[in-house]
Length: 376
Image 1 (cartoon, rainbow, N blue to C red):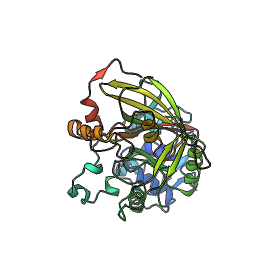
Image 2 (cartoon, rainbow, N blue to C red):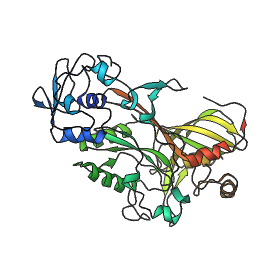
Image 3 (cartoon, rainbow, N blue to C red):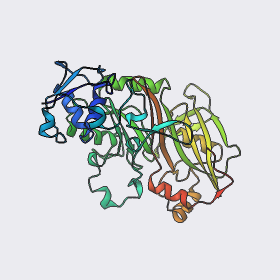
Image 4 (cartoon, helix red, strand yellow):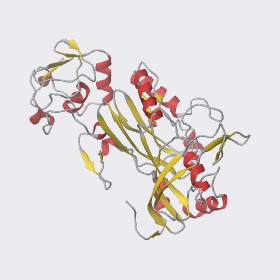
């Protein structure tokens, strides 16, 4: 058994956060497991992940952590500042992604440090070799940007379907990989995604780890309380450095796949609003940062194609000749669309998560010639 008495530096902190701060060498799954198995007690009562600790509370952990020495396990009082690092303020922490530090980005928004970032690694997507695809890419390869008691955020690679469906082999979707991961973690709920990305799109997806969390996340997304941002490389140079595309989208189904028609009226027409800002002009292309106000199928792809600036690598709405040239000259083998940022408030905390461009997209950008100045 490990015992800790809460001092002023850990007062008013959630139990799960205290465990992460007090035992930084242990994995998050270890903390979730001991809480779920009721092996943590606060003042003799079974502890809950989200309960707030008070100065003087006694936390008993009926598990032997590998990072704690035998001598420490019998020590009933721990000095937070000396043993666990720098002191934390005695107030509820409000930091992005529950990271231990925050930094200011160029846009003036606080965001998480490396703990809240996806790895800038290459993803196999459609350009992977058959050997790579047959190597068992699955739960063991999930790129978890953040894992909390309530949800996880995953960096989905291009080429991976968000969920099972026609054209997707059994067991080869993000949802199924999350189920496999959940079994390994001993969860009693199948992790479920709260929103989707097109198969060709890479970037962040939120998955709930509990039923009540799923209901709350889907409500937040439905009521536009989750801000979703994307990077896209589009054909040509936009006349305005920032703007809004406000055109309805209507779904049409065909043997070759569903598409969205822009600007039609009628009972099936859906409101769709896309905000954008040019991040950098290049010769023949613009890198744009996009914020969705609505989340319709193919919204970004259809909207930009409708104004004459289709996304590079888009095989459904794009410039096919330009796509062939980009594949040959720039090595672009996929759609240039990436979910790069999520912003939302969860239980009073402002969460800001950033996910950099994967290597295969950054490589394309690095080959382009900038013109004028970069827009922040």
